[in-house]
Image 1 (cartoon, rainbow over the protein chains, first blue to last red):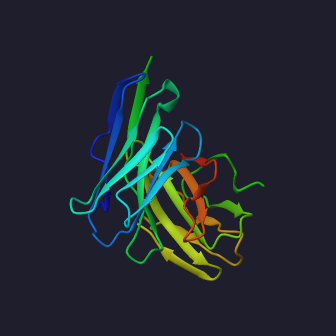
Image 2: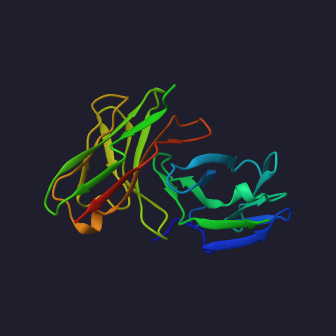
Length: 112
Length: 112
């Protein structure tokens, strides 16, 4: 069963608009979440993270929001740029804090 | 600083052959991971290790073996290659308590 779920396989937005990528998790004990970005033929690269003691973390154009009661987090990209077109993965450590589990990813396409 | 290095980058195997995918990190990270990425399926955890001499199964361990004799190296072994193992394999490392996991560039394996 999926412990980290990204239910939207793809998202298309126009340059300059906001991109919102969503992620749900099943275990309320998960306490640390990461977002990764992946271009074709490259390894994933870290984007931003959030601890469960926070409900928001911001880094430039990227903001992650965490709603613990809903077991939901979202990544906001504002403004979106064509170079943001990539696959975005949400990830979390398992309850023991050892295994890093990823969602299926969401492919973001930003058109100019 | 090389980060996480994976070799080879590409490989074609015949059914029943064996091979080892190499992964080395020079950041003195405790935790290391092997993932496979299939189209539309995200990153599936194969095996992971929380330190030298300690390994554990992830979500999809069947058909693979690992060892962790040193902090730096975490090789992944395929004993009897099957077409279902055709995939892109990524190795990653992290120190728990640090914000991000670092990934290698991937190994694209085709079993024919």
